[in-house]
Length: 518
Image 1 (tube, rainbow, N blue to C red):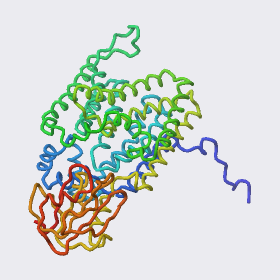
Image 2: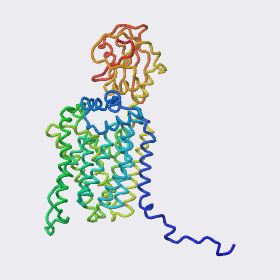
Image 3: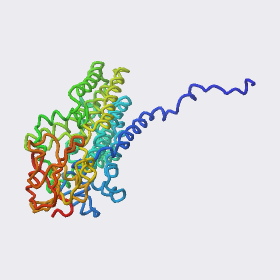
Image 4: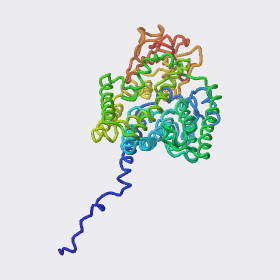
């Protein structure tokens, strides 16, 4: 072969990938990973109480009626319900359909948080912030839950990103973008006000004239100042419009928050971020190991020192996170106790950004990025562990519903029946066993079977027949959910009180009845 026919070697510029590919492939990879983690196991876990409550009690063919039910039975703004109502009209009310809004929001949050990291401190912070949100178990958990929390994460992340851009370059368009995203956050979750309102006030603050000591930002033009005030007014108007709904809802179903000791809730906030919703079951050793990696990264970044831009970015993220956590905590002291860890999920966005800025500081070098990668790997391992360990998952009400069926190993179903269940099981069992109906009060029943459902700790009388007409036919444990079946040789007349006497758990229970029981 002649030398002239040999292929010419690529030059250095030709050998390199296009600049845009080199810049964006990490974000694309993180987004694909986030989608795989969320969608591949979207129907792995059954609905728990709050998820099942929506299709059972809230979603109806009429959007107006659905919104009425939101006001009557829920304690969340309407945006998520409107979106899920539209999805249910096309794709039904299965786990994948109703959770798809949250899963899509969780995936979309990754590039948004990447942008937050970029605005705060540059590419290194963007890479780590996007990675933390893509693989952190608490973000994945709420991305796979048919509730409003992950939509709240996305809308707040958009509000934070547009806030940072408007603060850096306060144009009318950027102020309008912040107002829109801030409004979306408010109609996603009421706790958004604790972070959106301070950001809006900060944008609308008067800026010191140029040359004043301590001022490094140029003064705003009259048009920019007017745009900032209009953004504040727009966010305020949306917040004010939600007040009547807040009053009507009246904190439905939030009594459990006050019954949960405040000290335990405060402990659960960092615990949820480090190891996930049920991560406490892994033990304090795992929690401490993840915390040590995060602490080592933070200490290394601080020891090496932050550049001026990074220091400002870290303080900004810290201030926003502090507003999102400390203001609700302060509200507890005046009697407004709604401080549940899940309501602080969006505050974990600036927490993630803060960790990314400090751990990924430029002076921290490769060691800082390695510690950040190690923390992301720990998050990823914990997220995968959730898929492998039923004890880390939601209660298996779908499996329990199958156990209550005819081929259950509990003995044959024997005619009209009632199910006594903790309140947390009412909606899931109504969803998975649609032939059941909630008994609204006290009534006389005709039954040949009573199924008592619960979870540890059980009552000392668990397994004892509710009356002499019934005997214990079987017991099953389905991933921690326990059911006792009592049967009678033929249908007998019993009161609803007799059914409740079969309860195996402490506290209030609900009675569900099957066909022919009334």
